[in-house]
Length: 332
Image 1 (cartoon, rainbow, N blue to C red):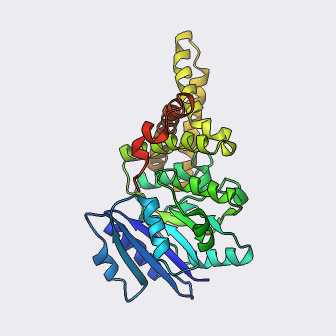
Image 2: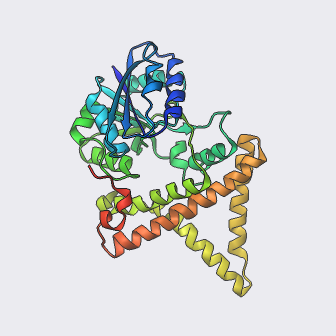
């Protein structure tokens, strides 16, 4: 099996350098190729790529900006492999990663897989806190940490594998972003392909993000979900509504103070206290524990409010998603 690693990049040469450096440390004994797709960057990574041409089999392409999904499709069309592995440019790849993927595919082949993400000790405290909330079973991020059913997993495109056969049958990613990865997964299911979580094929996801960008990101995640539910109603889950119910419940808890009832509000404080303890214990740092509370708050409210807005516009008012949220769609 020949792996092609597909990496779209937009103005992130420093990230690409870290990713490529991590791949030079791979313990995988077979050949693999790296396909870099520059998505119309004004700060290209060609110079970085050239530094690794003697260490890795690299193909570099520069194209007009059309979004990460279309750039991944472009890379898979250019790739030579029979199995594609897709990374975001802000990932660092463990040395054993490809060995774990090959082992899992050999034991029980599947045409599409996803893997979880983790944090390195060198990450900043905020990066570690965001990683905690994006992976913990205590938050909506549990699916990234591996709590979603292994045999019915919706892979995330920061760490995703796709066979050439599945790519050609599905035509790859659509033009929605974010949401292009669950959209592809559901279309693969409809075509008869299976997906699975490879729990040992994790990457270190070094998100270059601040609090405002994180809030905007999770808000977009929330807006994308009702759109996907409108396209594929039979795959809608009650759990998708939890962040919005969390937000509504909080406002009810605050209003209950008018009637001298603080029971619900105490439950919220208790919940966030558990997040603080869990993160502090895991990261051995109370500062990261506190930042995790901030990240969880932003995650729930960003996603929840985005979901509510999108649900009203797309599900209730029946507005066309591309009209209601044009920023979520790239023009092909």
